Each structure stands twice: as C-alpha cells, then as structure tokens.
Amino acid sequence: MDKKKISDEKLNRMIKYLVIILLSMGVLFIAMQFSGFWQWIFSAIRAVIIPIGIAYIFALILFPLIRYLEKKGIGPRGFSLGLVFVFTVALIFAAFYFLIPLVANEIQSFFENDFQNIIDYVTTDLRTDFIFGQDIYDQIAAYLIESNVIEDTLESFVPGLIAGISHWILPLITSVALLPILLLYYLYDYELIGDHIRGIIPKRHEKNVSKLTTRLNETVGAYLRGQLMLMIALGSVATIVYKLIGLKYYFVFGLLAGITNIIPYFGLIIAALPPIIYSMLATSGPGPLLVIMVNFVLQFIEGNIFQPLIMSHQLSIHPILIIMSILFFGSLFGAIGVIFASPIAASIRVFYQFYRDLRKEKNEHNLSEAKGT
Image 1 (cartoon, one colour):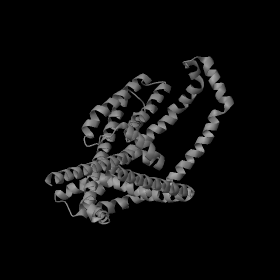
Image 2 (image 1 turned 90 degrees about the vertical axis):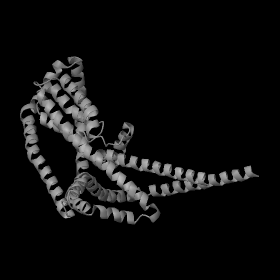
Image 3 (image 1 turned 45 degrees about the vertical axis):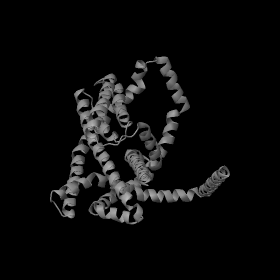
Image 4 (image 1 turned 90 degrees about the horizontal axis):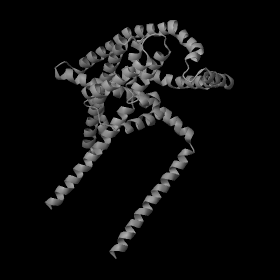
C-alpha cells in the first residue's frame, strides 16, 4: 500500500515536470517566431542597461571615498560629493592632458619614420630573410596576388568594421554624455536608491536582499578598485621596462599593456603582440627574443607580485569561468561586455555563495529545531 502510494506520488511529480517542460518548449517556440520583435526589445533594454551599469560601476569605485570624507566630518553629502567629483574629473583631465600629446607624438613619429620602412621591408627585404627560403616566399606571394585574398579580406572586413563602429558609436556617445549626470544622482542618493530597491522586495525577503546587496557592492567595488590600481601599476612598469631595453614607442606599448589588462588572462597577451611584431620588423632596437622575454617577466610580475599585493580583495574565480564569462558577455554586449565580464562574473559568484550560505543557515536552523523537539 505504501509502495503504491509512493509510486503514485512519483508518477504525479513526473507528469507535472513533463507538462512544465512541454509548456516551456511551447512558449520558447512561439517566442522564436517573433525574433525580430525580441531583438528590438533587447536593443532597447541594452541601451538603458549600459549607461546605468557604467554609472553603477563608477559609483562602486567612488562612493567609499565619499563615505570616508563623511566619517572624517567633511559634509554634508553634497560637499563631499563635490570634492570627490571635482577631484576625479581633474584627475581624468590631467591624465588626458599629459598622455594624449605623448601618444600622438609617438603615433605621428611612427607613420613619419617607420611605417614606410616596414612596408618596404615586407615587400622587398623579407623575401631575402624569409625563414623557409625565397622559393616558398615567391609561391606564397604569387598565391596571394592570384587569389586576391588580401583584397577580398579588406573588402569584407572594412564594411563590417564600419558597421560595427556605427552600431556602437551612438550608444557609446549617449553613455559618455549621460554618465556624469547619472553618476551624480547615484552617488548623492546612494543609500536612498538602495532603500527604494529594497522597498519593492517582499518583507520576508527584505533582510536577505539587504545582506546580498551589501556583500555584492563591497566585493565588486573592491575588485574594481584593485583592478584599476593594477592597470596603472602594470602600465607604468611596462613603460619603464620597454624604455630600459631601448624599445621605440615604449609609451604607447606600455599604455596598451595597462589598458588591455582590464581583460583577464588575454590582456597581456594582446598587449604583447604589437611590440613583438614591431621588434621583428624594425631595423633598430631590441630583438623579438628580448621583447618576448620582457613580456614573460611582465606576466610573472603581474601574476606573482601585483595580483597578491593589490588584488587581495579579488574574488577567487576559476580561469575557465572568467573565459566563459568573457565569451558570453562579449557576444551579448560586444567590447563593453568583454571589459565588464569579470565584475559580472564576480557578481554571479556572490549570488551563488550567498545562496549557499542561506541553505546552510536554513539546514542548521532545521537541525537545531529537530534537536530541540
């Protein structure tokens, strides 16, 4: 009798799950018939999420400074906010004021002095120095000329690049224009916004949501501040090391190393390619082997010195999860998704850890009640 009852319960549960799966598949099938509509909706949502998300990221970085000033008695909120905001804007302006001329001079020098020499080397001298011999070089060159691979690649790449830039240029301009306004409101009403968000949460979940939000802001904020410091430190060290070995355009290459470090695991690899390629083609300066060794040293410094010292508050996220998040969010949001993949992955990990903590607390509570009875 008991066995029959248990099997009936299992059968009913299986039927219920089967119905849910069939209904979900039906809803998904119907939704796929209106793919154009959903793309339109998704584009509208993305246009809203991107500037708000960027403002949230900057707020997590800057708000601890405002809170620190208020604890020191520098207030009210508008005054401390004004100090932090003016200081941040002045810092950004000073960085652009000093960096842009240096970058522009090195780029101008490259096109005036080295660009034509590199083109001449690739088209003439490379045949003599080709590692597989001149006959193989002539065969490859003939194939490229006859097949029009280069022309076809450029014809397909350039329109796609222009379309991609035009697709992102308006959202990017909108985000940059709205960022100061959104950031001011967000920082001024930081706690108030959190209270309003918690106000829409049912009372029985409000306490847990408050804990989760606090943990999320502290963890992701610490990660972002550490990542910013890491970018500055690595870019400075790379610039100094490139200059010491006599690499031309050391400032652009060092700046590239700092900026691309925002992409975990891939950033330094991407930043290493331009100086290595340049050292292979340039007629003077350090050889490619030395540049490769220097980049290995930079990898070692970043992974064994800067990461432990600066990123002590960084979440321990497995590299596979980081790579998956870069691929996934990059496909959703493009370059912005790649840049912010790590903070998003960190947020997801906080959600998962918080859920595990709740389950653990609930099990301990149930166990204590069972012992009490």
